[in-house]
Structures are given as C-alpha cells and as structure tokens.
Length: 173
Ligand SMILES: [Zn+2]
Ligand SMILES: [Zn+2]
Ligand SMILES: [Zn+2]
Ligand SMILES: [Zn+2]
Image (cartoon, rainbow, N blue to C red; front, side, top):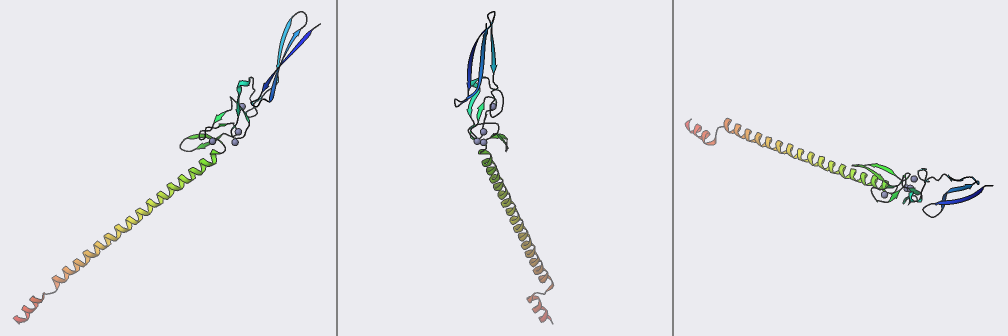
C-alpha cells in the first residue's frame, strides 16, 4: 500500500490574493519515499513572466494598478512613480526619458511651449534685425542727400559770380 501526503503552498499576490499554488506530494509506497513538486503556472499579469517566489512581487503599478514583478517594474524618470511595462513610454527630449502615462502629455506640452518661446524669440530677433537694417539704409540715404546738397551749393558758388564781384564788374564798365 502507498501513502500520499499532499502539501500545498499558496503563492500570494501583493494584495494577498492567491495567484498560484505549489503542490508537493510525498509518496510513500512502502519501499521508497518520493517527493514531487508540481507548480501551477503563475505569471505576472503585467509582463507574463513566471513568478516563483512571493518576493518577486513588487506591488502595483502606480499608474494603472496592475501587479508588478521585479522583471517588469520601471520608475518614471519624471515623477519617480513605479510603473508597469504598459504604462512605460519613451519621450525623446534633450535625452531619452522613460515616463508614465500622466507625465508623457505634460512633457509634450512643455516641449511645445519651449518650441513656441524659441520661435517667438527668433521672430523678435529677426524683426530687430530688419528694423536695424532699415535704420541703416535711411541713415545712408540721408547722408547721401546731405552730401548732394553740399555738392550743389559748392557748384553754385563756383558757377555764379559773387555779388561784390558783380558790382566790381559793373563799376569797371
Ligand atoms: Zn501600469
Ligand atoms: Zn512582470
Ligand atoms: Zn510620471
Ligand atoms: Zn498608465
């Protein structure tokens, strides 16, 4: 005759729920005592990797609430919350960031605002440049006009006899 002793170890999730069981059978058939361990497949609901030990549970995703294991836990680079693989997003800014669902739109918004500020700064700079160019052109124009008037006065003086010169000429006649 054989005796069977069945020992069951329960594997619990982070909230204490049973997520798997390990069954150990000790079979005593009168000749030898054997031990068999059958483990029901326990997998992380987030990454589906097998879980063998309760210490592998890392709590729940701070974003969606799914259970996390030590294989799939990530930390949001922006808010430092624990996140699962589904809630992990890549954001390419000045450097590559791993962020959660709620930080991603905030980062995009901030990037958009920064782009707008950069754009308006650039626009202002261009306008300033155009204004300066216009002023420079006007100054050059005024200078050339002034020079033209001076030249005309000089020419007038050269070609027109002075009043005293004219009087002298009359007297001489
Ligand atoms: Zn999540
Ligand atoms: Zn996992
Ligand atoms: Zn975050
Ligand atoms: Zn999420």
